[in-house]
Length: 183
Image (tube, rainbow, N blue to C red; front, side, top):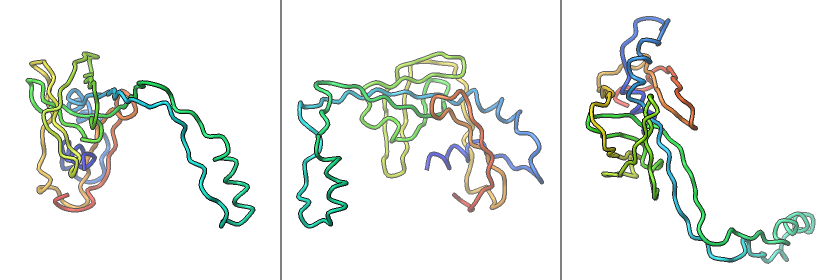
């Protein structure tokens, strides 16, 4: 859902084949942010994997599976940290940011970084797992914002552009055709 939302935010009609999206990327990318998260997980001191009852499995497969269940792997003791990365975009100059709900789900720490490498700790203001969207708040003012488009105004075959910072990359831009009206 967020992929479509991001695509629709920067949707501008383009007549014919697009030759150059650089001005649109330069304009819109200032509002795109990187989101990094940390989730702390407590792990009990136990072994992974339970040796299943393999008596009814053919001998060839039983031998193969026994190699994996023969030596259960230990899990880390105590607390560990799981890190995540995602993209989002600023929707208000006073620090509201939209992202995917799965990016920030169960996060203990959320850091938002803008194009100028400014970083802020973010707080989840609300999230909806069903449509996979979350609203974050950072303590900042005067931020550049993304223009929110109207997906109902798109026509099948029009170009849309998705800009993001996936996998910790600075920026990516992907142009695609609108596949369905009102997406």
